Length: 323
Image (cartoon, rainbow, N blue to C red):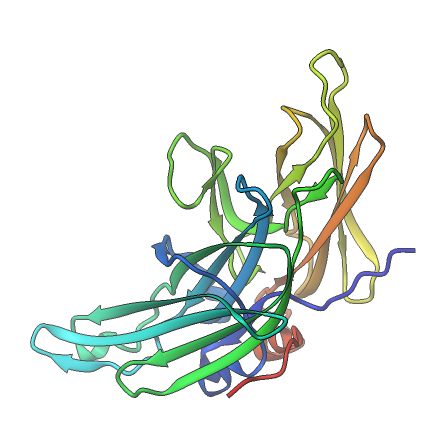
């Protein structure tokens, strides 16, 4: 019988624990570009880093996409002629199991406010996207975040396993939790398969957000133009921390070819505050092959918090800190 695990891939830290920021988790990435911010105001400012893997068009490579949500409230602001400025540097290095460097990247960003009184005002976090093309295998990601005014640097590392989607076996990408998924004809960095995906990096469902948006891709489906029943079945299941299944959603989708994407809108307004596991199982109705992937998400509602925000988030324990 399936027993859900709550080991998490996220890197999450509440801003009031800036000193502890990189003491719990980790990540990995490459070409840096700023993306649209996402709002997660119920828990205050959240540091969050997440990596997601997808099939690449490049043979023998996997596409690794990383989103980094960085609040700016705890940066050191300095007075200049035309306002107050804070800046930081985010650096990433990816190393193989023999500790050989594979790739690295750094991104520098700055924040401006007009007056001293604005420094402590709430504002949306910065969301930054990186991407790598890497071979499948085991890696270690090392991350450093430096406040460029104080030169205080916090660092951490994480072990990660990159799957191979290029074979003949039925495959499923990582599950991306989003704040919104909308069809589009745009061609931006947030668009996959004509779907604009606004990332929910910390995977937190806040009050007023009663829908869990999920994006994923299915690879190596059996497909024939002459088959009148080219479909696969998708089943989403939600488990609570007691490993009890509390919700499910299933539907069939027609195959456009050997690869398809799936989006889902799962109502979660009835779920109380807590951490949950989402599992997606896919069955190819022609080949009868199946596969599944899991991810975790958190629901936080006012008046129902039995644990502090930091306790809910710090339970996503991962690799040891690196200094």
